[in-house]
Each structure stands twice: as structure tokens, then as C-alpha cells.
Length: 381
Ligand code: NAD
Ligand code: TYD
Image 1 (spheres, rainbow, N blue to C red):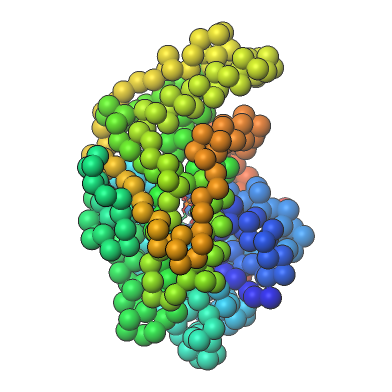
Image 2: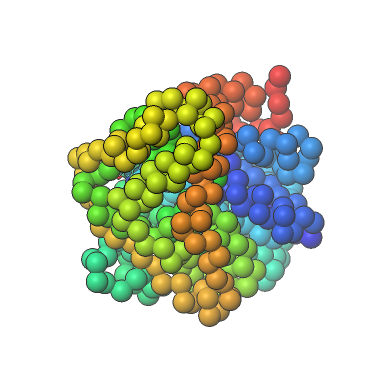
């Protein structure tokens, strides 16, 4: 049995990791710390919090006092660091908070972990996994080789630069102080519980609501798509079996252009409506409700500034060292994901309408300012 801290555990990957970890290692005690930003969602964790299966702490990773108390109380042997500002478009509009959370927040966590593990003589047993992105490596041309762990860092967006900086601080803590940390750099995740601002959920929801599908530029930008369940499986392998001080790339072996992804989403929705007549009455504004293709909604819009052309990830190190394989083919994962959003209409409508934000403020937030976190969130009502 181990006590595990998951920072950012109320985010997209965090929620999926909590459920995956619970399923794989039910004996472990999980503590989630999350500042409940706009990106967080506790709906799927709420039953676990209510029954005491996991401990949820409404707190900010920049709050060293809070982190010190948590390390003292729980004597974590594993830390998975996911908390971050994660959306590139937001980093273009407002980079400051990305530096605050992704750089200073990571530094605060590293310093706290090092101090606590030194004081408790746990440096030889404990491990911290810093979850980062392939975007730190910059952009590839069509014929370039995929990013390896030795690719130079060339971040192009404020988000990527903030994650690159955090990776460097982790490395410095390993090299200078002997912190037992590892880094993973993964490609674009998709799957259940992803916030509707990201490409795949945004396109699914817009199609269902009959809104334009805004493709930046000409849609030729390429991403490597990794199903979140494959990502979580890899993270659990790396934190236990990886070598401290090492970096592991995680990818889905599924390069697709944005236009291909959007066209596939349209095709999956068109087929779902053709197979299930109730969908037409649930989503009357969707073109598929009247027998037209969702592709009629595709709209090419102004490109994102500094838009990276292509990401591709070489995962041979992970495969050779830890035997990891990707198990979800992209077309299957995308079909499952579209059907998840079809089934979880309440979930995404609560997020997109702002109703969920009001619920979370009512039930979990007891403070207005960052840093005044309570040790364990309890329902106020
Ligand atoms: P997300 O935006 O869905 O979730 C981030 C979570 O962190 C949210 O719950 C948010 O409330 C929390 N958070 C933000 N600032 C915080 C702070 N100061 N203190 C405590 N909690 C805070 O992100 P995600 O998609 O789940 O990504 C998780 C991690 O994986 C991030 O570090 C991200 O950079 C990395 N990553 C994600 C992807 C992807 O495709 N989603 C790809 C590569 C890397
Ligand atoms: P995104 O989900 O924001 O992830 P990232 O920028 O981290 O890769 O975007 C994925 C790709 O989709 C990226 O090339 C930008 C593009 N995109 C659009 O074309 N339209 C959109 O509305 C969004 C959100 C993204």
C-alpha cells in the first residue's frame, strides 16, 4: 500500500488517472490536490470523495504551507504532477497564469517534496512523476523524424514554454539535489471528461448543436492522438518501473491532420444518427437530424498565431524499457469518445452553460482567493 498525491486530479487526465489507479491498485490511498480552476470537474470523483475512498484537497500547488502540511500528514511515496494550465489558446491570450502555475507551482511542489523526503529519509523510496507535453520540442515538418527524448527543446507557445521551463526545473532538482523524479512528454490526449474547449470535444458538441466547426488555417496541422486510458497505463508503468532522472515520451502512434479528425467526427456522428432515431429529437439542430452530413458545418477560420505544424512522438524508449504498447486504435477511441459525449449530455451542458461552475462554487469552494485552501474539502450544504 502506498499513499499517492495526484496534483490536478480534477482535470481531464487527472480524473481518468484516479479511476485507472483505483481499478489497478485499490489498496493505495489517493490524495488529490486541485485548485478547481475553470478546467476542473469533480462530478466523476464526487462518489469517491463522499465515501472516503479518496481524499480531495481544494488547494493550489503554489501554496507551500498547504503542500508541506499534506506531505507531513500523508508521507507520500508517489507523486503524479498533473496540475497545470493546459490550453494553448488561453496561453496566447493570458500567459501570466501559465508561468505562475506551470513554472512556480512546479517549483513549489519540487521544493516541498525534496524537503519532506529528505527529512523523512524517503529519498531512496519515493518518486515524483512530472507529466509534460511533446509541445516542448516545437514543430515538425512533414518529413521530419518524430520527437525522441533527445530532441532539442524549441517551445513556440507560452504554454509550451512554461512546460519546457518546468521540465528544466525538474531536471535541475534531480541533478543538483538528487530528487527522485521522472518526466514524461506525451502527445494530444482525448477521451472521456475532456473540457469542451479542446479540439475533439469542441467539434463533437458544436456538431450536435449545429454550430460551425472552426478549423484553424487550412486544417493541415498534424497531431499525434493518444487515448487517455493508454496514457494513464503508461504513467503507472513509468512511475514504478522508470529510472529516476530519465524522460519518457508517450504517444498514440496516430498522426492525423485536424481536417481528418474533424471529418471522422462528422462521419461517426452521421452514422450514430442514422442508427438511432432518438438522437434526431435530442439534437434537432444537428445537420444529421435532417439527413445532412455534419461536414456541412466545417468552417475554416483565422489561424492560431505560432501554430505548430506537426507533432509526432517516437515511443521506442518506453516500449523497450517498460514494455508499453498502445492498445486503443484512434478510430475506435474516437468512436467511443463521440458516444461518451452523446451519453453524457448533462455533463457537457453543465460545463458549457456555466451551471457546473455555480455548483462547484456552492459545494466545494469556501474561499475566494488562491492560497487559502482548506485541508480537506467537505460539502458545505
Ligand atoms: P486540465 O486543464 O484538464 O486539468 C488541469 C487541472 O489542474 C485542473 O483540474 C485545474 O483545476 C488544476 N490546476 C490548475 N492550476 C492549478 C494550481 N495552481 N494548483 C492546483 N491545481 C491546479 O489538463 P489535462 O489535460 O488533464 O492535463 C494534465 C497535465 O498533462 C498537464 O500538466 C498538461 O500540461 C499535461 N498534458 C496534457 C495533454 C493533453 O492533451 N490533455 C497533453 C500533454 C501534456
Ligand atoms: P488543442 O485541442 O487546443 O490542442 P493543442 O493545441 O495542445 O495541440 O488543438 C488541437 C489542434 O486543433 C491544434 O492544431 C489546433 C486545432 N484547433 C482547431 O483547428 N480549432 C479549434 O477550435 C481548436 C480548439 C483547435
